[in-house]
Length: 318
Image (cartoon, rainbow, N blue to C red; front, side):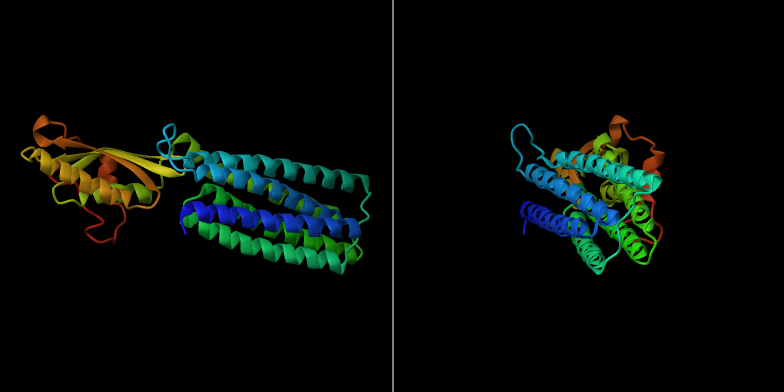
């Protein structure tokens, strides 16, 4: 199944599960009056809204390239993820406020019940399954929105556990544990927002990819037998994908056809790396005096001791 169909299918599944959890937790809250269960319902309600946004965002990001967007629409995904983070912060703040005011006023009345325990356990299991599924698909499809959704689901497991402690504690005669558990849930929600923002800012500001990937880019360029060196290697995020530009150094007596073949080989090799989109290669012949010392490229060329010689070429004729 192609990326477009896969990410949309995941978005629909997440929306359906979150909607079901809102209904189940809402009914349980009305029945038990538990603030911890209410906080979990608010969390799931926020997740449902985020799911709608994600679904709309994924629809846009999976549209094919057009005249105005020749590289496609994948760059929308980080914005979708940040919108999710805004909603996460709002939900966490609301739950924290209600928890704090309830504890300070001493108006906690919710008690524990088997129904509440069962619903929270059900919610935790559902969120774990969603976490694993969204994370696997998000990493496979290079989708930051799905990875952000996975992180949200992972932290929902922790918040459900905290809520469960509160409900059980209230049932054992310690009703204050119910709003305190809601407060713990709120911090879990807020941490999710921080995590989502942290993971997506790099996509928006054009940050460099991890050092290991930059090293592989350099090593693949230098692995060509006719490439004598490289410099001015630049790799940066453009949305969730990576654009690469670099200069390769070759002997100047090559024909134009030979130089073109070398360039094509290098471009093809680097494009085979996961997450790499466009690759731009400039060919520098030796006789023009454009071969340059580049300490960073030299360092990346020898990054990763223990790899095969093909993966760890060195700059030649330096």
